Image 1 (cartoon, rainbow, N blue to C red):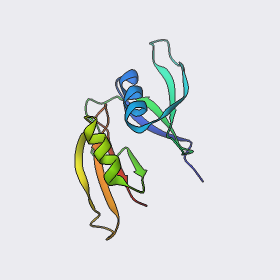
Image 2 (tube, rainbow, N blue to C red):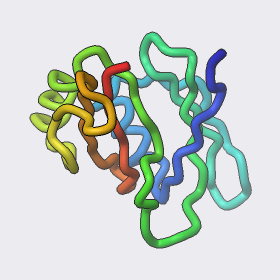
Image 3 (cartoon, rainbow, N blue to C red):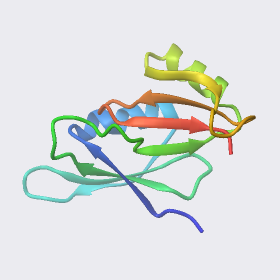
Length: 121
């Protein structure tokens, strides 16, 4: 089983697209006009994954407090070090998950303020 779309609320599609390509190595699957107001249907693929990210228009002024996406990564420490070095806003440095000893996780914000989690499986 896999997720076809993981909708991410965004204000600025170009800024979000650039963020995910530059920092997470995503590839563009679809980028086509969608509505008359200039909004586009953009799908990005995470490297080596079947999940596709879909940018949906954000309606509120503030991002949700809940994580928008959880990325499973065998080495969240290295991933977070790379994100931090490239200027990404880190919320929680890598640490052991209090709900599951031995599991590591960390959190960051994307270009649109969405809260993201990187964790071991």
